[in-house]
Image 1 (cartoon, rainbow, N blue to C red):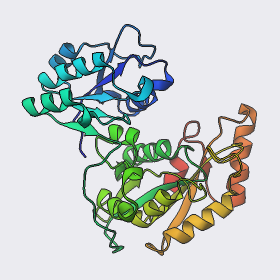
Image 2 (cartoon, rainbow, N blue to C red; image 1 turned 45 degrees about the vertical axis):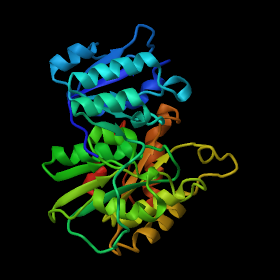
Image 3 (cartoon, rainbow, N blue to C red; image 1 turned 90 degrees about the vertical axis):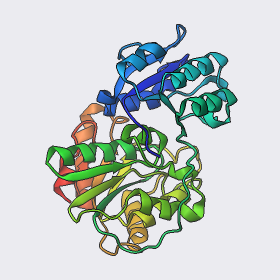
Image 4 (spheres, rainbow, N blue to C red; image 1 turned 90 degrees about the horizontal axis):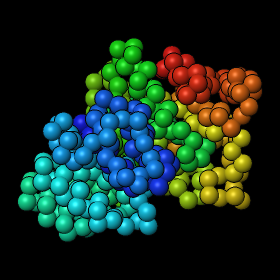
Length: 331
């Protein structure tokens, strides 16, 4: 899946700013790709970029309209469809992060076919993947793993890619979730891949490369999450990671969505992830820990990171506050 940029961020009638979190993430990490936003009069979200009509977006050179919002009720309103049909007529593709498949909407498929445009459902990959070979491939790879879901794995890997680029290193962020795909312009929604092919999909997402090139792979789920550990294991085996980063949120009371499951101790989590990683790369190692310290009082954040670093003997950073230079230093 390869999505052309620049983008028009379609916010439609988003109920609030949280409903547009995917669009906001794309704008934060790829502002140069986001030429404008489309909003109806009753939209309650705002990315702080230029408002554009569909016609204005076409004139500005937009290649793809990004549906980066959670729509009300899970269905696509008719007024969205009419605007998106117009976008297709004017030569733009549409990429959707919605649960509803835009390829199941006749008006859109007919307009796309008539005007030679593409419809992308980033939650629903259409590629066919092979089972993993497990054969070692050239190039270097870094994978973010977590104590839980939603602990900053995407943010951390994007920050690491940016830090590597600032040092002149060869590096590419490899997206495995919908927001990451919009940010990268390509990738695979790995949690939608049939289980037998997850590791193979990761091998294809992160193919052979130059010996000094780093693929920085977005992690998903957690080996300790009873609902989502399967996708994590597939990612670990397919990545053949040389470097692992543990992501964690301070003071999280329990696993996301599972109140009866506590988060694992950091060292226990690292040990299990490392054991799994060494199946396909015996040289795998942890280079550090990335912690979201926002739940802590500001005065306690530095001391918390120092405690983690001392406990594990590795750099501990908050990517939002301290940056990730200490992690890249330890590659």
